[in-house]
Image (cartoon, helix red, strand yellow):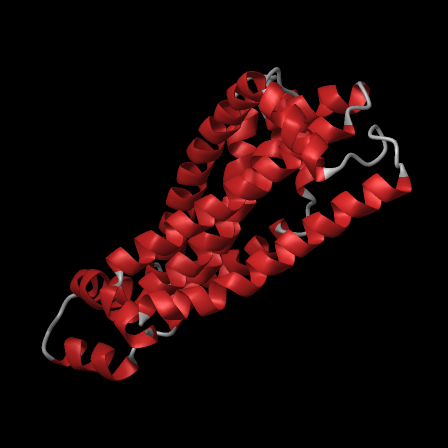
Length: 255
């Protein structure tokens, strides 16, 4: 049943993607469009295969800083949400500042971080962490706020400490909300890594795209774009799979 349900939900997007690629290929072929302006899917595939060793090297560099930044941002986000929830008065004081922090464009923070920390890996990690931090923090806070109040009052009535309530009731209850934030941050982390590499790097997909833009190689630009999309989808799928393994009661309820 699950395989049939996956097949029914999975084939329509696949058919749409195939149709789009087919129309794209036919339009470029029949329209005699210059490859430097709009390459065909076959041209993109051929050139990506030819340049695969270099593309693979840059992809690994992007994945490395993406994973480090994601792990850092998620850890700081969970800790921040827990502190704001546990410490009285902190949420009222810092919550508006969290909202205001998202009004600063990510692209504007990059040059400032480079001025402060140089052209090494540190400013890239900080930028990716900032991108991943906010969704996890907000989702975790929402999970804490949605805790079952009847169960909360019952645990207080039987003498459970604040620490016990937090780890045995509030934290398990917020896991579905946390994983929602993780899935958003997973896709944001790829975007953040590419932006960080645009601003200053000697490797990575963002750096690779800048090189190809200077050479007017639109085909290789598309190769990098498709790899970025693939990384985002793969990372999202891995987080969704981890969610099903960790939150088994939630997976059973939704199936």
